[in-house]
Image 1 (cartoon, helix red, strand yellow):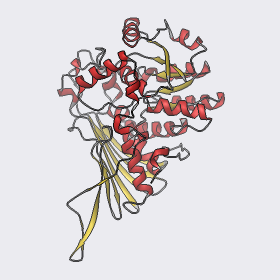
Image 2 (image 1 turned 90 degrees about the vertical axis):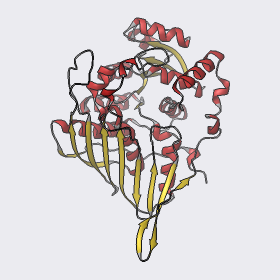
Image 3 (image 1 turned 90 degrees about the horizontal axis):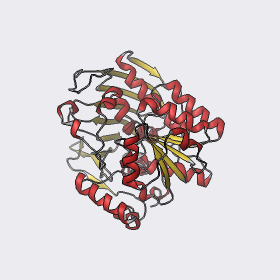
Image 4 (image 1 turned 180 degrees about the horizontal axis):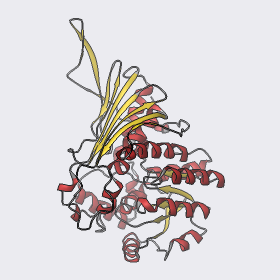
Length: 397
């Protein structure tokens, strides 16, 4: 699958840095409206640069456009790509309005193309392990889930100094103007919808508590920096989701069943351990055991070697990966999982796990929560999606 990247900003290096994990994906070029930034990216990753989006879309070699632009440009870039006959994988969100997101999905279906969007961590080890535990009825009938997506009081940090490995700054103005729910709420929402199916209703509250976030340029809008939602799934369970840029970092997920609690401490962290806490009976009383038991983490063959494929990186790519790992001192998230899934669906002529309808449904849920700043109350979700299969390596005994 030959792909091209539109948008060479901060997040683009996270995609390019994990692209070598997927040798079936070939990056044939990049473009950005900022020519200097595109040239930096092109030089650093030794990839050709297109002078414009039009030139990229005119290249018949490009099968798939990876849209990493500003969220407010997602709709226009994705629409132009679909109209040019390209499959599309977009950074989150699919679009900033429901009508635009729905239009993109309908357009893709009309043209026989695939469109998908981030986040894709439902395809990784921790989410697949939790899904496997639920399929195996490890905690009995599920009643409730608590999902936290608190991202620290970012306004108190030195965020103007945050850089990726190319030295491109974190786009704090864009992030603050998009808001914590749309920026980060997609991680737990995509997990919950994959695990429990379509959402029926969303009851949400949102607020902007820190209007002055210390930016060097004024913000044009002040979206929520706190939101909380109660989510009812058609399959029966309910969930509470909290997002903020105020409370200390907490990315945990707890799923409550009749026989115990299935949990992980950080859905952002690659290969975050999965645990089960069980109820015990003492003196006729049912109590939660003070200990937790690890649930075996599932993963693709060779995942303990970071999927083994880093060993075949080109030398320059390997040096960049080592430098980035030493700089960040943390496990690197595979941002290209969703791109690889879309490419595999095209190659194998099958539905994409992260289908356009699934992404549209998650987009609608997030917009309902985000919009509670102006209009709270109960929102009845319009969209739905077909259930998809877990990863093949997660179904083995």
